Image 1 (cartoon, rainbow, N blue to C red):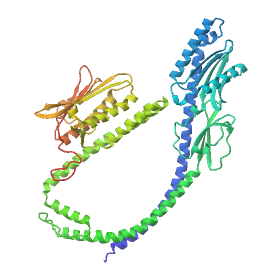
Image 2 (cartoon, rainbow, N blue to C red):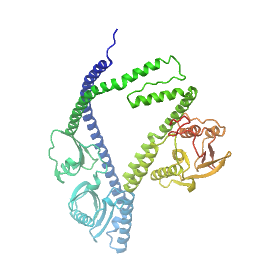
Image 3 (cartoon, rainbow, N blue to C red):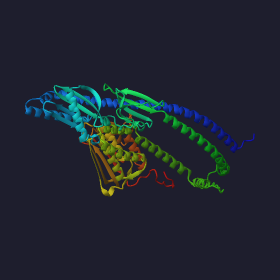
Image 4 (cartoon, rainbow, N blue to C red):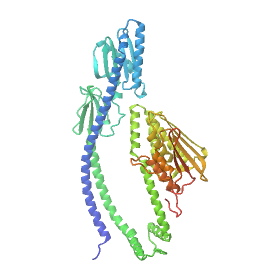
Length: 578
């Protein structure tokens, strides 16, 4: 039976592939569009719910500040109207101290005011924790005037209400009793801020009251909505969802523009069609070039290999090919045939062992809880308004991640590893402030000594995982110096802490010279990985010691020769790069 042409078969298959891919792409785009709309709606609802929870939490905290102040200073609030000036003085001092302490403890309120109309007593305390939201003097005076008017009117505002003061909307709540007033003010600009980015380009948010007036918007498409006026109809392409913020008579509303989703999907369809047309034209060119530059040389090389008849010694391919790649392939094949088969098999086995260990090391670095802890720390710092700390945390986190992503079975200078550990410590210090005393020491002359990457970092991270908590102070000491070990000059790295110490079964394995094994629950996987890495890179199993320090704590010691025997990126004895 006569075989068909390879080119013809390839052309038919490419055409069929084009038809099938076109149908698949059309179905995929329709599905993607519907899924995108559904997912965006779900995401918008989730963002709205998150905003509501954050705002309800802010109001609840502000309520607690007002409640605690009125209850704890009930006597002082009555004494500020006393006929005795000394009584009024000490009452005001007590109230101001309580106000200041409340706002230092919780920054939920921007301005806290206590006033009485018998003697004109007036006290205020501002949120001093964040200069970004500090109220200017003119605004505070306008709020003071409004408070006196509110006290004079006798109108009770026991629920949160929005009032425009000096051209700026404020959310306020006031308690009045026996001629005095306790009022809390929150700037709407601060209360409904865009610090928490919705991360959805077609989503806008608005803060409204029970009358439908808009007081603040987030999103470029609503930026022209006048403050203090009702929202106008936006059109049928907007999906609107509204949630009430607790018992404050305030609402947070989301506006999702579905037109942007449809436009993006249409653009994707046109792009896919254009790509398919270009791919078909390129396929014809590839067929012609493949036949001349690949199929013919491949056929020739296949025939030569059949001529070997099982003989490997001394066999060489002499044909001169028209492409550089096949010439390189021919020369490489001839060189490989001259090598000893047993040596090649041994080198291949060793190389595979190194790759397997490297993959385990890489998997060890990419632990999901590391990134989850990082995101949790950033979220916590954000809630505390520590913007400078967040900036520093992101800087050291990015450096630490870049260093981790380059990790593998290779060495780096000692100074580079110590610098990375310092970045890791600075990052963890923001998560466990004041809980760890870290000190690293090494001689300047040893800074270029090559050590396995992530060696010190893995041990320090293991200490943080098992010994560090916010309740206790842990000391971590890293000491590096040259020493003579078993008749050879080596770099001694000692890492010590004053935690609870290593489990007895782990120490038993190391003291017996056995290959350590990770526990069934996955703990101490890092120690096993380090032992395995040192064994492969230096062809020794005596370079790592584990001890328990006195009176308590762990001590990990490494002895490192000047040069690793096996590492990735290093040429082997055969001239190959591992």
